[in-house]
Amino acid sequence: MKIIPLSIPTPFYVGDVNVCLIKQDPITLIDVGPKTKDAADTLRRKLADNGVKISDVRRIVLTHAHEDHCGLARQVRDEAKDAEIFVHDWETGHLFGRLAREENQRLLLRSGVPANVLEEMRVLYEDISLLTDALYDGDFKSLDDGSELEFENGSLRVLHTPGHTPGSCSFVREANRTLICGDCVLKRITPNPVLSPDPIDPEKRFRSLAEYLVSLARLRELKPTLSYGGHGEPVKDFDEIFNRYVRSIDERQKRVVKLVPASGVTAFDVAQKLFPDSFDHDVHRFLTISESVAHLDYAESENKIAVEFRNGVEFYRSL
Image 1 (cartoon, rainbow, N blue to C red):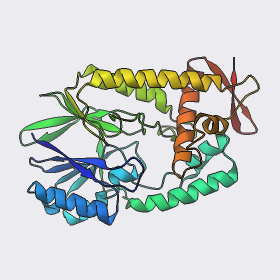
Image 2 (image 1 turned 180 degrees about the horizontal axis):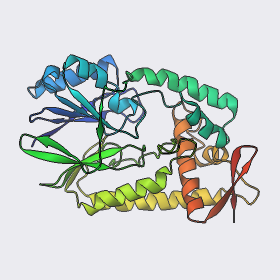
Image 3 (image 1 turned 180 degrees about the vertical axis):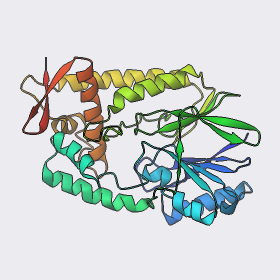
Image 4 (image 1 turned 90 degrees about the vertical axis):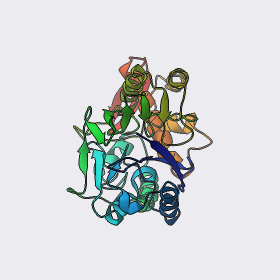
């Protein structure tokens, strides 16, 4: 089985996204890039460089449904005529925009985000959602943990690795312990635990950081020899990345706990103090709030801080 990473441009600060071409029947793309002309042209050209046309693609598999990974899924599917799309049932980004639903907006209001700031964020993500063509029921099939993506010679096992998003998935070729892991593992940055409703009960918040740490440990148990992340270079020393991530998360936990006074503070307030240089920069505002909520949730679950509601807003306080 030949896995060929293709670097596809995105309009986001994170830079290019890695699309993985599995050049074996059925020809498969794992992720596709955002819905921009630049990304579509680049994908088409790089496939041609490897002797593949869009019309040869038979399967589109999404690690998760963020715009930079899934945006071209419908366009590629339509051009390929009969390609199938696979995504985990807990993903929603291929269905509607990140802040389009009330349950997503309520999570931000609970986190202390003022209504006027929420509206600014909603308008921004309304524009960003244009980088993805929405899919509908019947347009895709489910990725199930432990299932196999079969190829002419070999297979990839599906691993549900929630954290970055609720339905994030990774894929392992067990013959040589090679991973394709989307944004679960990135060489140069730590993945953001994105604020999301719980897929089982949308009135609750998905505990992203706790779930992410479980997913990271699960991948480590596989002893990967090579890991293709969603951005940047492949990871050849998984233990080094694992230990760096754990140290980084532990250091941020300590910083977050220090920002929580006895009088109480919201996640919105913590985000501004934790990320003073990036808080007001376009998508960074939502990401900084996501990061802060995730760490506050985790600290509360570890009994490092307490949380209480005041007029529908969560306030965290020191113990």
